[in-house]
Amino acid sequence: MIAHAIFFYTFSIIAVVSAIMVTASKNTVHSVFFLILDFISISCLFIMIGAEFLGMIMLIVYVGAVAVLFLFVVMMLNVAQQKNQWFSGQQSSRHIPVGLIISTLIFFEIIIVIGGWKYKPEIFDINNSVSQASISNTHSLGQILYTDYIHVFQISGMILLVAMVGAIVLTFRQRLGVKRQSYIKQISRERAEGVEVLEVQSNKGVKLDD
Amino acid sequence: MEYLSIVFQEVYKILFLLVPVLVSVAMIVWLDRRVWAFVQKRQGPNVVGPFGLLQSLADALKYIFKEIIIPSSSNKVIFILAPIVTMTLALIAWAVIPFSATQVLADINVGILYLFAVSSLGVYGIIMGGWASNSKYPFLGAIRSAAQMVSYEVSIGVIIINVLLCVGSLNLNDIVIAQQNMWFVIPLFPMFVIFFISALAETNRPPFDLPEAEAELVAGYQTEYSGMMYAMFWLGEYANILLMCAMGAILFLGGWMSPIDVYPFTLVPGAIWLILKILLLFILFALVKAIVPRYRYDQLMRLGWKVFLPLSLIWVVLTASYLFYFNLLPVN
Image (cartoon, rainbow over all chains, first blue to last red):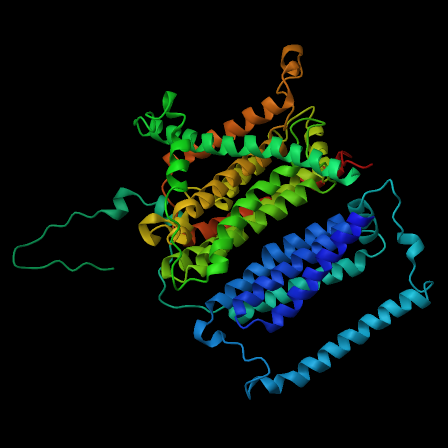
């Protein structure tokens, strides 16, 4: 148990400190790196409580894909503008109330969830979803997700699809005058249509139509 | 005291796994150069030691004694961290590779997800190196590699789903044992081809070595690195290639299982079969490097998103419907 506690406190301290550093660090790219460290330590905590599937999915989805795209966007920003004026500039102080409101909301949501969990355990139907020791984490998750909650699962998939289509529609633009490479056209080209032998008269040029 | 003995045992096991992996990485570099040379009718490295076998050792010695140059305008912490991250990620993935039914360092339930997660983290070493160098060519190389690796991971993930549909478990040993009657390379052959090509792109091997395309980007993200830090990038890259070969061998070629289930073949230990399969796949990797010219960047993206992703998704639907229709779904 001691080793377990040591690992738990190590990972949670790293998680909390890196979460603070995400907002506090001066360099935006450093913030993203701290965010990645935060994700990794949280997935370690997931694995420690036996939710190995969630931990791995967290690594694959958030660290492997989302954070890479994040980093991608942040690196493209102008390096000179990356000086993070935390609580100092006139401009950034306008955003502080908004941030405070959102964080209070999230805080109360968490309190409601945890409080309900603690004082009204019968609301949450845990008995159905309790995992038997013989079934692995992944199996029990699949058995709940694809049976009882299949409609919720599919609706969330549809929402993601709509968001994706929306993003593509917003960024899509038809560019004119772009020469596109068509593999079929290139491969199916024959000599007869590609080469033309012309009889050129002297002192008169040839007009090629293209 | 009890903890200490457990720790010592584990460290012993880890060393027993890592030292052979590192030595074989050095050997594989030699093999890569030899195969490449033979295809082009050259000799390749043949001076140091018998058949040039010690060439990689000589190279490593040279790298160790070279000066490590850190550019003054670079972001020093991240610059130094980048090769360490690459190397560590390439090595920790070997923890779950099964060398036989019992010889595996960590026999975890979600082994294949772990492998996939670690290989998708591999992009960070390159991005960190490219960004921290604070130079144009490394930065362009890093951006290219980020886009490339994220794109090809998607198709590798879908291919893994294909295999998992036939197995019904995320454990690597279960995946190997499920191939007892037939290796998955036979029913899922198109997926094996797509996996092989995606693995080439995922490990930045030619013909998809755009992050380090020397004709355009000097050496991509490695431009500013020198000495041992460069060597660590290079070791990590080859360890990743070996890992991808091992993943291909486990997913499609029956892992540590012998090809025929007959008496003299079953005597050979599983580790030897796995190593032979990894070598076979690696020689294919090396041959591709020697034969195929480099892709253009837009062609690479087109191949990943418009060809491989739809094909592998269609194959998921086909596999699932076939298994469902003939009632072959693995249910436990």
